[in-house]
Image (cartoon, rainbow, N blue to C red):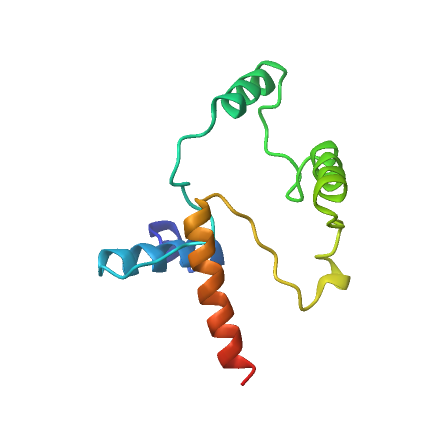
Length: 127
């Protein structure tokens, strides 16, 4: 719990609680692969930095809607549909119950390790 949360009796967000727990485990020398908010383990690619600079110059300086910019969501959904045959959409509202929402900013090796661990945990749950 952070300083403000302690003083106001307002709990910190679940995201912050998870990050705090990950940091605690890492300090205790546990091998942890965090799939939550945090810094990626690689430098942001040049083309992304270039587009970010251009977006700032074009006035995109405020937080977007929590679901993200509609034009980016639509373009991402089209790319997934076209290149990966994955249908994306608003599956995380009331119709999304029971689904897991994931966002990745890590290396492929870390993802493979994380998925293998998830597969192991799921097999234990279902046995």
